[in-house]
Length: 368
Image (cartoon, rainbow, N blue to C red; front, side):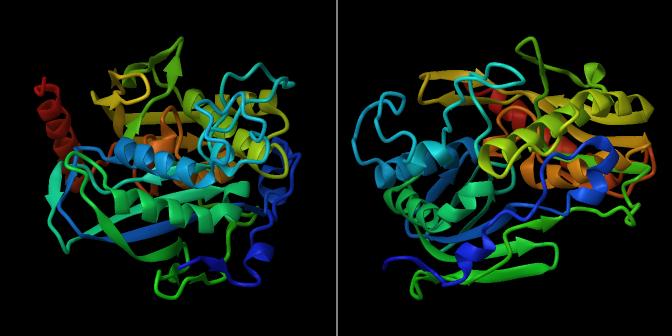
């Protein structure tokens, strides 16, 4: 059945945030950001074998299906295609970098989505069981929601993972701070109108003005000279500026304009932020079908506490829960939740969670 967005969906998809924000006005002028999180619920038709971390697997299946649906020329490479400027496939999955930019020369720019896979741990979903994952869309990618839903239906309908397990879409749910709302079922065909921006903390909201704790649930990969930094080399400035850069570039390339205007002033503000880390390094490898080789994608997980003058960074910390941060964010790495935590106070549940992740990675490391 064809997907038809409801009449006023397009109107709600227009970005509503203001551009040209500097540190002095970061809270008062950034009213909202064009982003939405969707939960996809599939029912397995045949057994689906999930690896320890399925983000890369799901991203590959999604990209392949999206290209099949969107590509009209069937050229092997997008770069030489005459339709590259209008085709939704590169715009969503692999956006081409600009020929020139005021900041630097880009070899690639961040894609306007994040795939948040199921919880860690390899397992087999039997026929009839539910496969659930989330997909975050940013900026103009929100306008392609009908196509993205069709791409997921095709990807799971044709099979994913070892054994090509298949599944049928049950429903799509819009997830927001105010609650979850079902917006689509295949048998209905339409997409219900829903908000596609999130409000950022205002000047009067000082919840993140002086303290914040980030609990990283998927490995964080912040790089220096091409190598991911271990916990002992991570600094508050490293993370905060990575958040600022990612959020601003996503806004610039996929929406109305850059979110941060004065990076130098924002970098200076990092000097007033103190941090305390309870992070552990976790190794992880995945097989790249494009490069046809295994790739090491280790990163850090655990909690990272910040204190000081955080007001300029509050919107960025909030956005990071949706956008993720660091390398390979598109398939779910660098994902965190904001938590209220006294410095150094790590709960027993968090310690057990980190230990389970270590066991997952250690088990995978033993697989040849």
